[in-house]
Length: 106
Image (tube, rainbow, N blue to C red; front, side, top):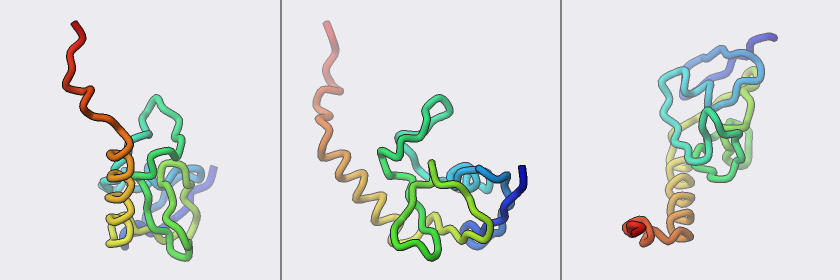
């Protein structure tokens, strides 16, 4: 398996081919929030909280499933990314009834 080199937030990063952007960023001290991702969970691209900007891409991409590519330029924090994450959390929060979390089964 070969390596790919990409730029994440201005730093050159080399990772094995097939590495997700989330894993590539995490290995460099990145702090990308996730809700639907975990060691025992296959990424479903459901929450969209882990979105990042990829230069040349019209849309933000989910870092949990997008594989790193040679020469890719990734931005993990920008006004666009922060706004999208905030909107996703607001949409998710508006669709969940959190009032049940205070109840205790008897």
